[in-house]
Image (cartoon, rainbow, N blue to C red):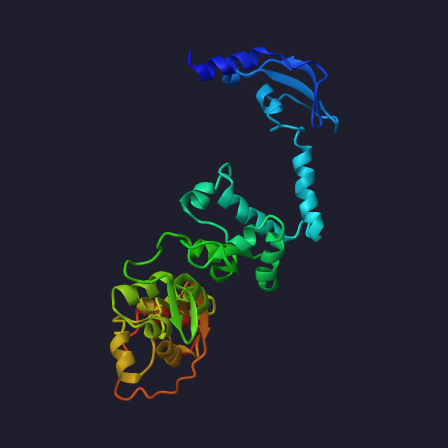
Length: 321
């Protein structure tokens, strides 16, 4: 047996007298340790608050354990009450931030302190840290927001922190979420936002924006402003719905039609059949009803032949076309 183990064994053999006080704890009896800690002596102790706990002997003699846990809770509560911020979300964000960067026992430590993320000295100050954090970040806080680092590899400091929603935080995670070669953040008209945030604001699928920039080589301005092609157009006649392929025997090439007449598929359909029903189109996962405002001339363009099923249905419904 090594010298350290011999010393440890000797220390553990020496009992603590029942009734000995350690801070708020008084020993009442020796307790049986768990199988994982058979090497250490444990003592059942009565805390001044009335709770019973069974700490290890060495934890008592070193002064590591002085209560059942009530003392630590009182100290933490006192710190909050000192600033009048008990339950305040800004204070909660502050303590959570500092804990995950400095406390190795924190379950998220390996994502923060464990990979070198630190808190600036002003916010780490033991006496004025919270007050400094409130001074720097408090004025911009709104309900429902959480503290976030702008640069995910940077530290917690005023120049690199802002308040963000949970979705914005997910978008700002360390891992790239879009097409290779496309930046996570896009600047347009003096405004910088995450690609997915632009998609939400403009009502365009994020992958469409990503592919336009990364695969098609479009500029950011064009990628964000060019309308998305309509995927589906429907004519509703007295609750009976027809797609373009159900109306025309040979559906027109709307790409050529748009170029020739300057109209979209739903504008064309509304011009021809808007008087007998309602034209709707599906764009970005949403259906829209269309009312034609584009006054155009058909010129020498002829309306394609109609399907028998469509004309028969109109006759059955008593609709003139």
